[in-house]
Length: 189
Image 1 (cartoon, one colour):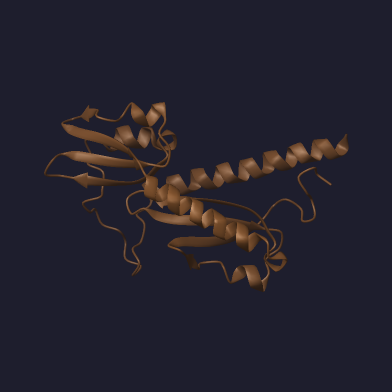
Image 2 (cartoon, one colour; image 1 turned 180 degrees about the vertical axis):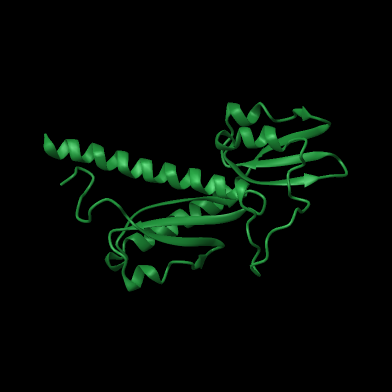
């Protein structure tokens, strides 16, 4: 009985950690201006959401599964690309907000890239010295489409730390020590 109880707590801990990281990333995207590759603070660009539509899109950011967006100021159009079509993002498709038309499009290119990085991390997870226990991936900043992979390891080792900060097929990799005790498997043993 104790083993099953621990397994449930482990799953809750993993889900809670993933949820907290996603929320923190979303807050960082919209509250903090992200630096560009040279370390300069990002300035408004053609991909900044217009103030007329920004509140509506930010209010729905968690539901939209957004991978990136583009803004056409001449046409007063915002194209939102999503990793998954849902009723929440479909309700925005074709909607006009303060004179701006919102288009929602399934991002097939992102889905292919996600499948490719997932296969690569699965391949890396087969190497015992990397101690990869779990991973998640997604878009770090929809303004730019920057892609990110978070890898959770049993222990930080020289081998898995070589992955930290590395780019793999256009995805930036971050390695984190798991908060789940090492040696605990899915059943809590």
